[in-house]
Length: 368
Image (tube, rainbow, N blue to C red; front, side, top):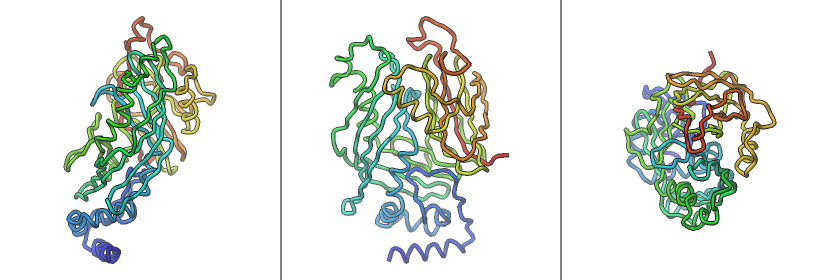
């Protein structure tokens, strides 16, 4: 019955004068693929019928969206902050994921593992591993200019696990710091697991790409974009404000280029001393990052960067990256050991002096 209804609405929408929406050439987090990613999104008749029917919304999401949760989670990283709403000081990179659909309760469970890094005033660079599981009550709404996808937390599936794998400052008393009430566990362990998972999240999909936000946003709210709206005809990949300390690196991405006709556009505005950005393939960048997270000394990876450019402070700037199809990572280098731009010396660098604050917007668009 529901298949017949959807087919009938699809036929009506394709002939009512509404233009079909163009499918962006980027991956769609929590994508409502198939029916929801085609002309149906632009049809007012279909939107109204779906928005008024919880049963139909659940069927569409569980049928077309649930199987894409884990692939999308594995295709991106999650930012970490010392304070809510603060600058990004680290990232979580999921490495494994499983999903399960509960038709009776109308919920979707996710179990994932991951590794990552973060910078703290006490420990310096810290590597970690995490395992968590949460049950979500998923829903969405088809608006005229956007699709809102929500994941409202139902319950944690088990006690989250957070383990420190490396610490830059080895003089710190880690017997105390890694205890049940330790600084790292409280700050990042709870943030990665209980904190972020318990707040739920919202994905807002538009023709300009997909924006992600922790917490539940209601239309017409949009996730904050530090550099404002992007250029027409481009698809948003990521946008945020990160803070990179001296002798640290930050990994932005991954970025997926699907076609030779695509080009990566990196808009940025930086505050602090000059630094640089270097581009590696995702394979090489992931291997290098994982070694650093396990405590390897900071230094360049075995393979040379594919592309590099200076991050000049002040003013809004844009860098075009003509990259062939593949997956890539942009590494923000604020060190004296990797690229050609070294931070100025200051005895207080270890305490956070000369940090680089970078607001950025990463987009995909057609090559000129």
